[in-house]
Length: 113
Length: 115
Image (cartoon, rainbow over all chains, first blue to last red; front, side, top):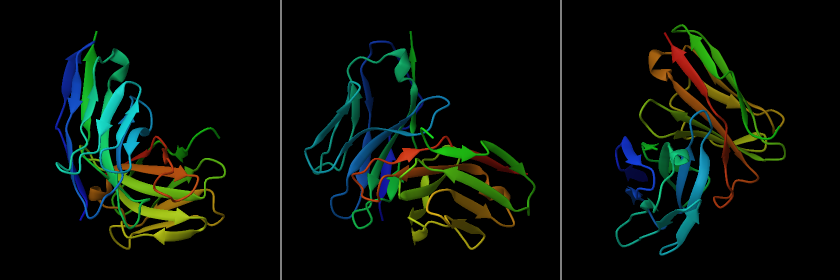
């Protein structure tokens, strides 16, 4: 079945540091890949997505590239801000039922001023 | 409303009781989803509605769980004979349609605690 494994947290960084959160997946076929973010007190929000191999999703300074050869979708940001403190979830959609998302366990990121 | 609304935000119930969790999706969204998030885990799919019908209920853990969406808008997740293992955050999401490329918008969830 589909599964997502992401880097365990929590991760604590200083402002302007480089952030990487690793995500690897197991799936049949070529699913779409997503990163969701949950800010304190808010619901899950789509951060970025990629729908096919070698696509790069980007938003708010975050990037992730769909790597079929390594079944990975690592999230990166070059210079984090305190406002990036949140829980980040990697997810994939089921190839046959693409409304159905499978999520990783989430990585808590705290950015200190 | 502007976003997906879930009520109540918190619910504490005794083991064996019946609970209902409500989801009010974004107006005009035909697709609605329920997920369950246990502590330290990512959300897990429970059920998907397209309009009034449950198009996929394969994630419901057992027959104590049931969900309805009678008018194609508000949905209610119903849990009978609650057990302590049902304690989790229940998330609702909606999207304009059920296509995977259409963004799903999530509510803030209902935190259910069974004591």
